[in-house]
Image 1 (cartoon, rainbow, N blue to C red):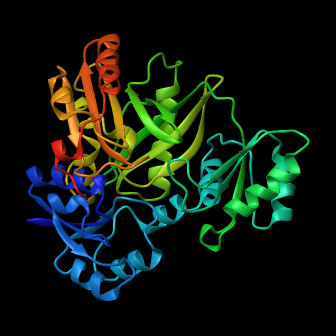
Image 2 (tube, rainbow, N blue to C red):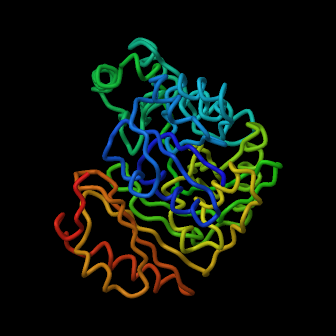
Amino acid sequence: MTTLGILGGGQLARMLALAAAPLGVRCRVLEPSPLAVAGHVAELVVGDYADPAALQTFAKGLDVVTFEFENVPAQATDWLQQHVPVAPPPRALAVGQDRIAEKTLFRHLGMLVPEFRAASTCAELHAAVAAVGAPCVVKTRRLGYDGKGQVRLHSGPDLPARIDAAFAELDDPRHGGLIVEAFVPFTRELSVIAVRGAAGAVAVYPLVENHHEGGILRRSHAPAPGLAPGLQRDAVQFATALLEHLDYRGVLAVELFECQGRLLANEMAPRVHNSGHWTIEGSVCSQFENHVRAVAGLPLGSTAMAQPAATMVNLIGELPSRRALLALPGVHVHAYGKAGRAGRKVGHATVVGSERAAVDAAAAAVLALGPGSAAEWGFVG
């Protein structure tokens, strides 16, 4: 039996482990927290990612290692690479950890990106904002996620003071500097999820339309309704070029903007992605199963949709009433085993069907439910 190691023990690792078991692949997770929800369904090694003893325990007997989040410390993958194959390759991880490297690579591969500049001092930040123009977004080069680590700036007489305030808020040696990105007047946010196998085969899921609230993904619609001609083709070509350039193995997600009928690349995630959760019920082979297949050297599964329409909603902060949620017809529920907390992704629900309107209506019914209780779900972690 193949044994897959996963760095990180959150809900993505949990769903990878659930997808791996039917394939004859067992999973072992390394995670600093003993309450990691992936530990409910996989062997859990509790330890710091930079602890050689924990890494040695984790790596023993593994056939391959992957990760569920892109901010894995480089020293962990450096150590592991000397003892066991790591997929996706650490080079992709390094690009995904640095927004400047990311945008530079996108542009190198011929993909449109918002105008951007790097800044590492307050004076450089003023110069970068002047070069890019306002409105713009100031982001940390590293460690930002779910809307964290960024400040929006608009033109006005107080812009210099707000630039100073943004630098004071975001400047931190851990962030590796800042990036200023021009604000894009986009029509909507999209994402593409693709997978590349060990032998170089590539498969791509349909483009998805995403809606965020407070910087956190709230809803995904697959396929993205009303796509302009050629956008799916453009997304496939770009994702394929990115995978091949990085000699990638596994699932890769790219967040995109649709702007005036064209795609602009925003960010990439070298891992399974929240906007692909709908694939569990909505595709012939989910992103999680395909990631396991790819990193384990197995043939890829079909990325075709199982039904014409799918909508996924994130359950954020707290879960709805379990009884009320499970009473909704046609709704597939995934509770992650997490206790409720403001801004925390505690689960998701997916609806699939033959008609977009009916699918979206059922998803809206999920969002309209009132909160449940922790006791009802029994989660304490």
